[in-house]
Amino acid sequence: MFIGHLRSWIIRHPITGFLVLAYATTAALAFVPRSLTEPGLLPGGATPHGILENVIGSAVPAFVVTGLVAGRVGVRDLARRSFKWRVPLRWYVFSLLAPPLILLLAVTVLYGLAALRALGQNWLLIFTSFLPALVIAVVLNNVAEEIGWTGFTFARLQDRHGPLRAALLTTVFFWLYHWPSFYVETRSWLATAVVLGFLLLPHLASRLIVGWLYNGSGSSVLIAGLFHAMHNAMVNPTGLGVTVYGVPQTDILVIISGLAILTGGIIAVATRGRLGLKRSSQSGTDRLYE
Image (cartoon, rainbow, N blue to C red; front, top):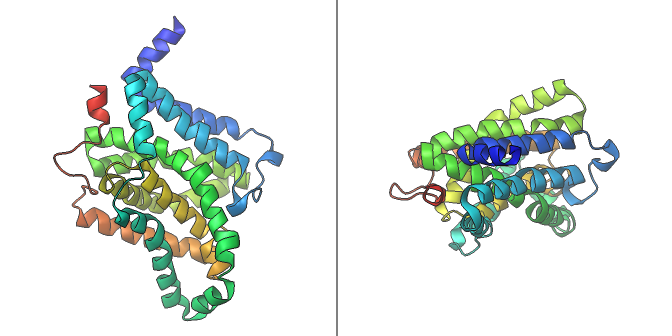
């Protein structure tokens, strides 16, 4: 009886159902012993906590709710969009090549030739530190994360509210989703509030960029996840900005946040809030669930 009522409720309120599952999972993971969530266990500072959070806290709830709402057809559609790799080459350029090149240009403008000299000295670390961090982020973290937040949440909200409002709403949900994981890292609610308060506007900008990449690439969650993974691999302590370009991590965080805000604003204005979505198209989820 209870299971039947719960399923009916999730079918009527799929996004709320997803959020309950996602938030409950991340909150539960906050109680995992700290010895299992210390940073640095994998390249790029990836931890078991982060991997579990994104796989069972984002991807799994998205597929569970989709299965309840749309059955096997919906699950296959979400899986197809999640790993859609046959897209025009330019979307790989936008998601993987443009961010590190723009960052290099920015730090060169700000620090002069020091970043270029550091790149010349540290180029081997691209293969031993930065790329391993990027691969770990792609395979274990960020594509799984975007399955829930772009392939499920943003796509469904976009069908009903349009791309810009969908990005704004997804930002709020996505921002709240990070509170338990930041608390795990800081063990301080005050520090968590300060850090996430600083990151709120960059989070919004990243949702605008990711929404544009998703729509422009023909609903490819993979492209969105590649950009997210590249962002993380540039900003983390063993990533491109700190290890290869030789810029302090705090500076890198501020620079990348500023670049994200600028880029997200340009995309929103240039696309008139459509974020690459053609006026005659839907992401497909609304048609599936009708």
